[in-house]
Amino acid sequence: MGLYFQIVYQIVSCFNRISGFDPPPACVFGWRVLELKEQGVNEEEAMAVADLLMEYRAERKAKKKAHARLKQIAKLQGKKPPPNPYPSAIKEIQAEEKKLVRDRFHDTRILEIVQKLKEERAAFL
Image 1 (cartoon, rainbow, N blue to C red):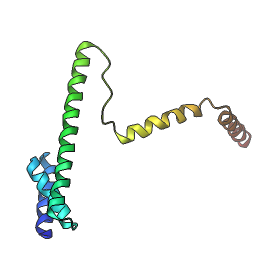
Image 2 (cartoon, one colour):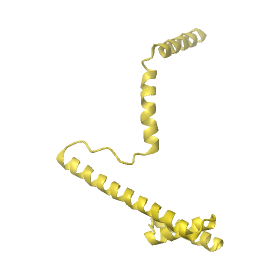
Image 3 (cartoon, helix red, strand yellow):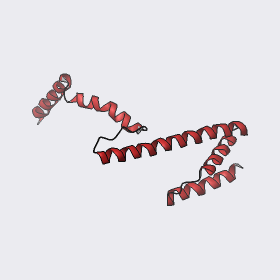
Image 4 (cartoon, rainbow, N blue to C red):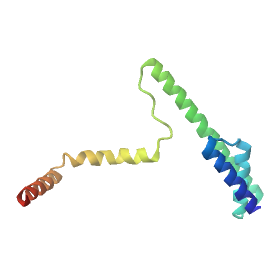
């Protein structure tokens, strides 16, 4: 069972890379159940976990479609689009760090250090 699953998974992942193939939800559900069974989870629990994951995936997909539609409506009305319900983790981190980066140019201690470095460089040259 493990070898067969790996072969099928490799074939499907090749299709994903080549043609952008999106497997049907039933296949995704089956693969998740098989993955969990390989890890030693009994079949009932594996099916319950896979079902929860499928519900979460469907809910997230619906929210993304709704957000895309809201963006279209806002664009047609000339308004600012609503915030993304699922922002990128990288963008969240960058937003947190943006304040620190801006402070770097206005903090007096940092400006003093930069001035000293410029003076040392000028004296060295």
